[in-house]
Amino acid sequence: MTLLYIVIATLAGGVLSVVIAASLTVALLGRVVKGLVSMSAGVLLGTALLHVLPEAFESKADPHDLFLTLLGGLLFFWLLEKAELYRHAHHHEGDGHHHHHHFDAEQAGRGGLSVLVGDSIHNFCDGVIIAAAFLADPKLGLVTALAIVAHEIPQEAGDYIVLLNAGFSRGKALLYNAISGLAAVLGGVLGYFAVGPWESLFPFLLVVAASSFVYIAVADLLPQLQQRLTLRETAAQIAWIGAGLALVVAARGLLHSH
Image (tube, rainbow, N blue to C red; front, side, top):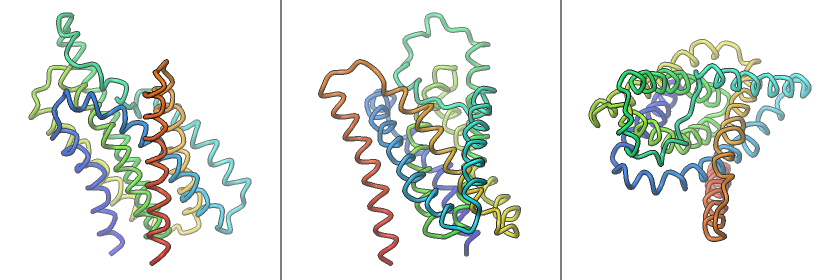
């Protein structure tokens, strides 16, 4: 049953988010993605700090080793993104098609391929993270999967627009994004069989998962929100982040009540 839960959760995280993102028009995406980016920052930080890290530190593992793992995880994801293997495309959500008059097909094609490769690796890592969380505790796995889905929707929306700007048709952009989303399922299944026998490693894998969430929120999402905005726009950002945190707290309360 645990493997079935992992497959369903990774399908939701890797493919459902692509379908949701692609079902919206580009104009609508441009309006809603900024809010979703703010909400996903709240969801990721709340999940990491209120769910995943407490679960890891309540284990019998040495806290010093867990903190060392957290540090290593943050540096690891920084290096992956530096190598453009863990890239995010949220910051492209407002690009539209206004730069097509300078369109370089070869360069744009390479950019689209880079997004797909980076997204596939990102989704594979998400799948392993979901598998580790479900193996540690099914309730934690569910909360982790919800956090990843909440984060994937604005990311896939950004990727979708980047692929359109790179010259992909709507159908091809959706197809390639969905294929890259299946990497999450592959990561989940491999994670289940590779991690399952090593129960003592679960706390460390949870810390790596938390480091991924914290890194994405702090290094990728929050900096995008550091713009000079009106008071109303700033209040909207805070509200979206608060909604993400409230979603995590509500999920925690709901799961622990059963």
